[in-house]
Length: 269
Length: 343
Image (cartoon, rainbow over all chains, first blue to last red; front, side, top):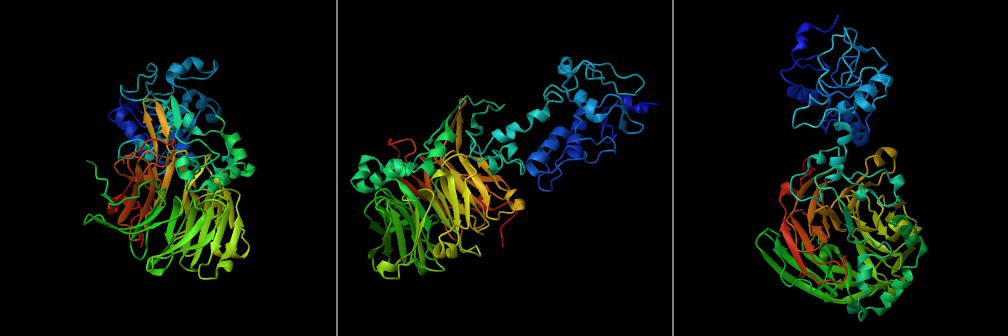
């Protein structure tokens, strides 16, 4: 037995079996019900369950075991399902369990973007481009890769890798009064790795961000770690009359190995 | 014309180095490279500003603070290596003590009446100006680096602590007892950021501090060293300007906390941002100023923000707009944390 007949027409939510008039509303439903960060003050709506899991893990350090409000057995947060796309091939809707080991096969299969089908392991069962399993009562989801995504939408299945970078890159320094979308409470932009990695080499800024205008070059206005802006300014001739001695002392100070030596090394760019 | 606030008349004539409001008097103290220590009375509502007093010291002044109850005295330090006490009632200047190099920061502890000074000689000294000259220096601590910024917890904190940000990214936290008895820091930390520390300021409740770096970044740090508390620390990027794919990263010169726990940062980009650190949100951005924001200060009531728009020198000895100090009226909406106004 497959799924009930009526389901053949309308898009429905894999997680809670609810039907919707169109795919867009289904996606809104999924974002609100199943892909919403459960942190009490965050409530960020992600595009997919893995996206939500990554967000909650990285931002709130909460490990997502189950997709919220999902029927038991359909609540695996590793499945990359968006709208009607990505429902694990060979899912047993009667017993709510994946026929194939979800960890091993389905994740791989469903995690692929439709048009990446050719990269899927040759032996992978199903997959986006594969015909639907016979008798599984599957929805007509063998639509051509990517067809489900509406024109203005990101390609289905792509969001998770995409999600984190924009908030991190879009930061306050940018013009405009409104906090960028990435400024939702939990997704503090520019979030740093833990302090343990402090003396790490040049941090993030150089990394290209998938954004409007990718940064091709970063200019640090003050990159002299050996002295401060005031020390540099104090060495100007116009202040030397005032305090020649201070400038001379400053010279000696900059040789301080404990203070400056490691900085220079860690800072080489 | 964007509203920049009330521009003070008779401003410092060379780079502003510090701003501070008196808790008792509400007067604004400004120090600058022109060797001046100036005291202003400014009211952005009525639009009047008066230069009340003007002391001249032997060299560029880097920092000053009020140093007596009722704000009747101030203490300053600068390139002249001296810690100088200026009596506002008598107008007399008195050298409290000296460092081996420039004095970068001064603080006054209103509970003990002690003066704290940190210098480019890598020393933190504690002075009691009431004692005879030879016994005034009651602590002289060797630090791992030159002092770049210091902050003493305010009256909103149950305990008194000093945080010192130094060259080499070292950050020390001292208690008054530790400082005067053993000279050992309560905590010796390293900046979580990869670049030189620029400015450090305590949260009003003393549970942590914000540390700004020259690389457009601010770290939110907790004093509590338990893993649960340390897990909440973070750092974020700010004061970066992107233009045609080129990102210019400005130093964050100034950090100032509002009594409600939110804080303002000022950068080399001339921008002042207000942040809700506990909720990781930017609350407000003021209109851009003509040049670097060299210093910021909120008054004790939190209804005034002093902004020094004054070129600091981060791009070398370049021509810059004239030095100016503005005092803005602060609207509650600009500084109210997401959790509401604390009781």
